[in-house]
Image (cartoon, rainbow, N blue to C red; front, side, top):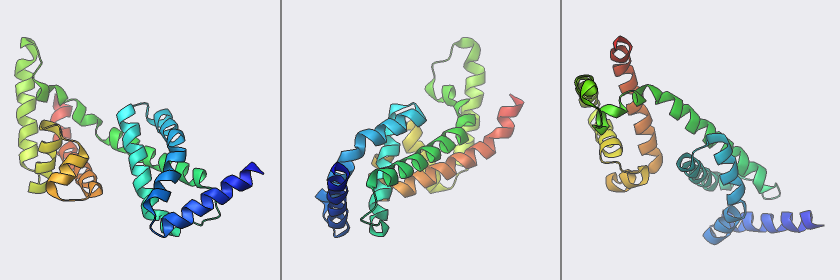
Amino acid sequence: MNYLRLSDWESHLVVRAQQGDQQAFERLVDTYRAQLRGLAMQRLRNPEDAYDAVQDTILKAFRALGSFEAGRPVLPWLMRICNNCCIDSLRQRKANEPLDKLDFAIAGDEDLDQAATANEDRNLLMKAIARLPRHYREIVMMRHFREMEVNEIAAELHKPEGTIKSWLFRARAMLRKDLTPAMEIG
């Protein structure tokens, strides 16, 4: 009996949200936000990445809401979207691992024995960044040197967050390809 009431309530919210009622969508998402957060933390084991995955889940659910069948349960659908967002995050994290070797070169906290190597690595990194197309170079500088969040970059450049994430992914891939031979030598 409770399941029927929950199902009717969900269906009602889905229909209202599909008709453009923002509050209905927010209420629907708020109902399951804790479960989404739990799944994201379980998969990613990092609060910031989990937060990003939940935000991406909500955005993707909102965009796909029009094709969602109102009679279906919402939680499994949201969990599947969240799981896919987590997989994307893990892929991106893995793709960026080679760049982590050069992170210390940006920070400047190395001791005297590492100073020469760090300076050389910093120069390699800056030259590789300079070879990027302008819009990629700009967002890499904003994200990694000015330490701006993706949403802040999107707002400043007047671009959707998805575009910024895509450009960052491509820019990092280009850097990784450019820097991999240099990292293998060192």
